[in-house]
Image (tube, rainbow, N blue to C red; front, side, top):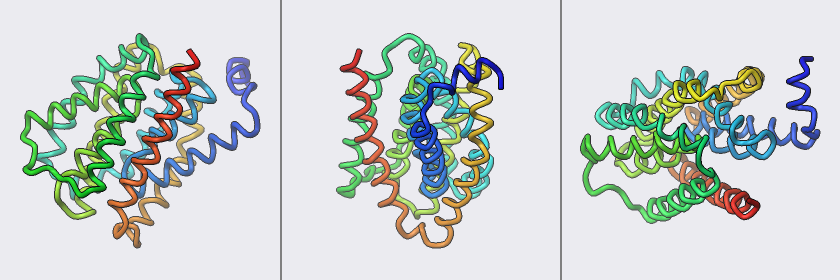
Length: 259
């Protein structure tokens, strides 16, 4: 085994490895079922074990095969008038976010993101929806905000989901919109991360190790949605957002106070 890899994983305890494997399995199932949330889980767990500068690009790379698994559903069932302006804007904003990742304390940003997600979850639980569909300019603004957060913290999925779930539509259409926006978020960080040298040998190798387990659990999640999970999609998505938001807030506050 190469010395650099031993130096990377050597300090990780058995409990740490178990935590990572469990996180990957749950993240993949959640991605397949509700279409989002996996990157948040992966970033949170791997940041504890390996640090954020490794965790964020790993979450990005490991999520690429998932986009190929789920993309046909998004293309077939999503609202193009919603997905296309949102996605184009993410690519324009992601480079700025990547600069923030290497320049600014990520704990403060995660606290802001978590507070925003929890506030929006509370509104959606109360049945809030947009009074009218967002126009291209507003959608582009939402996409730019998501791209900025994706580049800086790798956790912008909930922002895309909040916008998608606030629109009327069937569970299948909402899930397809979520998958379409999250797909763009996966790809928009590739060039900025590469430019800043974040795709190191360690990141690439660990991502390749994670992908088979991650992809298999995504398949099970998608199968569950098709069989019977679609009846519970909206509540499951909102509950996932709430849990992820609270957990991210707790970890962000802990990291901020530890500085």
